[in-house]
Every structure is written in structure tokens, then in C-alpha cells.
Image 1: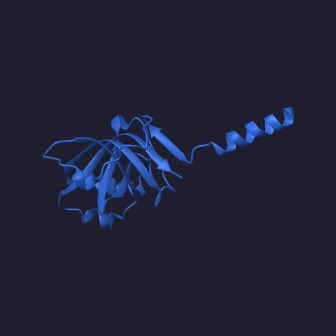
Image 2: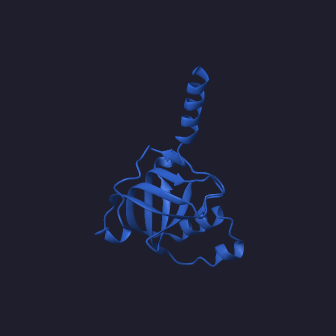
Image 3: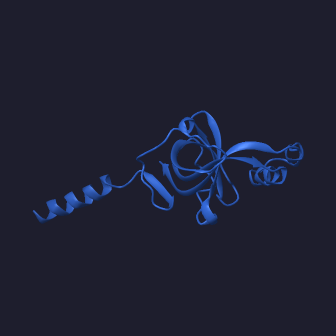
Length: 145
């Protein structure tokens, strides 16, 4: 009987392990919003969204690009308080919670992000104008394995 209980608890702990990784503040996977339902009105909106990771910062893991509701979203992390893995995240689903906004990204910042992403000098030099993008400042991230 003692061996049965030991095996039971071992198997329970193996099967109850989460198939997700958490970064930053611990957030839940409930109460998700659709990006298309957000009315920005020139402000930031507190929200929780789910989408697919397109790329991550290969230098530090300090940002991710996501595809959410067929829109590209650039995600940075609040106060650079946490980072995600630098590689192997592409194609995985993620949930992000924080502030979404529409931002004008400067040429300087676009070049910096391109440099972080390992773009060639030629590609970086082609960046000559600012872009309007959906930005997200995440407090917490869940990456589904």
C-alpha cells in the first residue's frame, strides 16, 4: 500500500505540471480580449491578448513580435523587469497582459530593433521613415509550450 501511494503521488505530480512558462507578473489565461475590439482613442488600454510569437530579441529576449488578430504587435516588457528566451519561441502561442497603444516608432528606434534582430547593415540603412505600430508594454507573459 505504501508503494502504491508513492507511485500515485509521483504520477500525479508528473501529470499536473504546467505546459506553459510564465514571465513577469503571474497572469491568468482567462478574460482575453480581441485586439479588433479595442478602441484606442489616442490612449493606452489595459488589456490581455493572445497571439502567435513571430520573433524574439536574439540579444537579450527584451522584446517579442507577435501576430494578434492578423495584426503585428511589438511587445516590450515593463521596466525591463523580465525577459523571455532569446530563441525557440517562434510559432508558439503567448498571452500578454499590460498596456496596448498605437505608437509612432522613430527611425532611431526602428534601426535599434533591426540591429537587435540581426538585420544586415544594408537593411538597417533602408530604414528612413518612422512607422505607426501597435505597441504593447507587458506586465506578464505566458508562453504555451
